[in-house]
Image 1 (cartoon, rainbow, N blue to C red):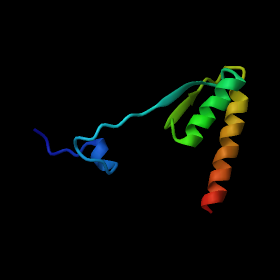
Image 2 (spheres, helix red, strand yellow):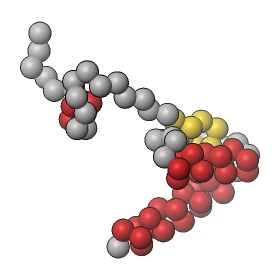
Image 3 (cartoon, helix red, strand yellow):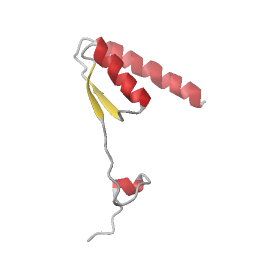
Length: 77
């Protein structure tokens, strides 16, 4: 047995709590995917996403992420 503290405990959860990470794939693949991914992230349904850099809508996804990050920084001011 080890005395190590689990990641869940370091995040403030109990030792027996179960955590779920929902990651969105295909960001950048098309406009609809971008809209859906950013909506899921904004609404708290998803906790992370990965962008498909060579995909046709990757530039749009990157610009949208930068705008969202700047807006969040301004609101937390």
